[in-house]
Length: 169
Image (spheres, rainbow, N blue to C red):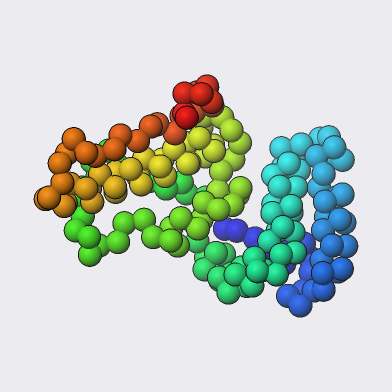
């Protein structure tokens, strides 16, 4: 379950820009990893969330969008990575694949944990998402009977923590 950005920074919904900045500085100092030697992992995660909350709430457009979608964001299960299946079945175009709402959950650093290769890492979460999107593209391509299969683009692998940068260009 996600934490509301306002609660994370311990501010009211109508906080002024100055009040928001002051609350951010207080929380950032409290949770900075350099100040939490005995609890560096939790402090690093919390500090990243505090930065994310401040970035969203300090931008009027981002804040308006967040306020308009807050209930949905807080209700979502952001802890579960996007599950893809090797037995993906093509669907008719009338059935939505990955929706904008599905994608929005990936526009935050809190949807992954670290840069290793475990189940919740950056590479696994986004690699799974990109594989799912490629499978949906292929299904849509195959559904269109007037296309030549040779014209279907081959999408590169997202890679993992050991993939050299140049291999993914």
